[in-house]
Amino acid sequence: MASTKATSVAAWAAKQGLSMMRFDYSGHGLSEGDLLHATIGDWLEESISVGELMGGSPRIVIGSSMGGWIALLLARHLARQGRSDELAGLVLIAPAFDMTEALMWRELPQAVKDEIERNGATCVPSAYADPYPITRQLIEEGRSHLIEGHPFDPGCPVRILQGMRDPDVPWRHALRLVDLLDGSDVELTLIKDGDHRLSTPADIQRLTVTIATLAERAG
Image (cartoon, rainbow, N blue to C red; front, side, top):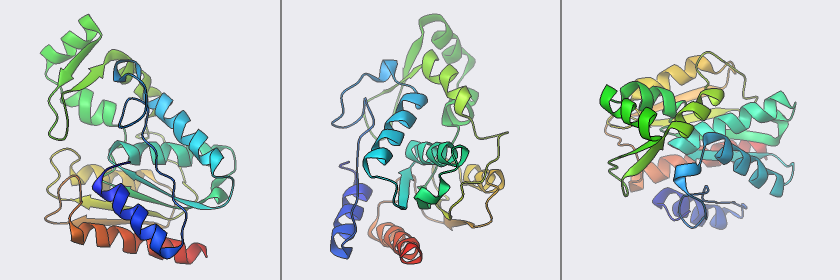
């Protein structure tokens, strides 16, 4: 909730007279919970619960990195229930969809995979915080939420902002997502000098303009 993007969008939304809900997943930020026991399914359920708190009125869901994957899973959940009309749009920043498999497991050295299999967890360095635990439970449970191989129509406009100098989510990963979404209203914006966070003033302006356009369309 305290990231540059989240606080900037909250301030912008307040000026526009738009309501905004921010939250930290369990094990992150101010929320309770232990990352050693957390799963993608847990965070999806939390997102669903937050959505229920906001009621059924159309809303724009914004997700960055892992949050982009959770936003997509939320859209898929609503689509399966015939409730896509509750979404006015998805705004995804460097969406790390299928990250547990495509960006973690497949990229890990065999020695690290063996450690996870043997001990149930390992810690990997992070450029943004303390070393991050990767657990066998996270990897195995994540396979039940993969988007690759399971295309779907999110039922709303999708806007993807992706830096081409992102060391964590390669821009070609975002390009694959465009193919995996069956909806016709999907746009990918590539920022040539953009990093993973996309938190510069120019990045924030691009983000708020994207949100504003969707909000205007939604009335």
